[in-house]
Amino acid sequence: MLNQLLDDLRFPIGLLFSIFSVILIIVGLIKPQTVAAGIDINLNVSAGAFMGVFGLFMVLSAMWSARSAQKRSQK
Image (tube, rainbow, N blue to C red; front, top):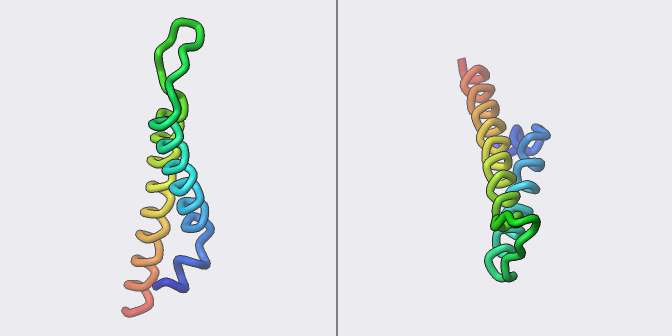
C-alpha cells in the first residue's frame, strides 16, 4: 500500500501542505498578533488551519484511493 501511496501525487502534496500548516500555526501562536485595517485576525493561524484541512483532505483521498485499488487487486 505504501508503494501505491508514493505513486499518487496527492500524498506528497498533502504532506507538504500539512507540514507548512503546522509551521504557520506555530509561528502564528508565537508571534504577537498584528491588527490591519481594524481587523483583529491572526492570518498565520487562519492560513495554517485552511492549509491543514486541505493537506488532510489530500492525504486521506490518496489513502482512500490506494485502499480501494488494493481491494480491487485482491478480487
